[in-house]
Image (cartoon, rainbow, N blue to C red; front, side, top):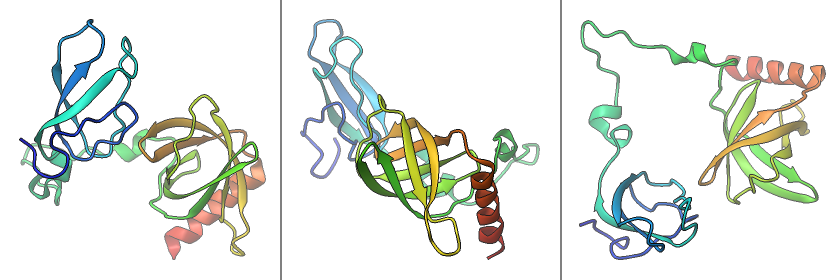
Length: 190
């Protein structure tokens, strides 16, 4: 059994998984028997397609994910015949791990957050509110200029996982795209 305050507690769809581990999943409808599922800490627990919110998650056994284990997530150790794959070339634009304050504007609402990484094509950001995926089009305000005046970027919400939100920039003006390029150039040199 898992240790800590998570044992015995029932979690519902929309909750964030408190720990990584094996969870017992009980469906409220009679369509499926209880089963186990692996869930990573911080993931949003999902709805069931059939019984919707009538599903409960309970920690059976805590585990660690390989990416969270020092022996596996530390410096890369390769076998002699194994090549290190460079996945950076698969993206349209390089990503930069830069933390900036961010304002998400949806209608008249303004929600604060911060960037995790940013590229010329979009941004991943931590936002302490759950944005509604129905209202995908938003405006982002980021301090990209030297005077910290916000640059306004139209964007579309592409994904959400817990508090992490992924946005793709839409219909950027040439001047805005140039401001992004200059920002990245200055950020990399600095």
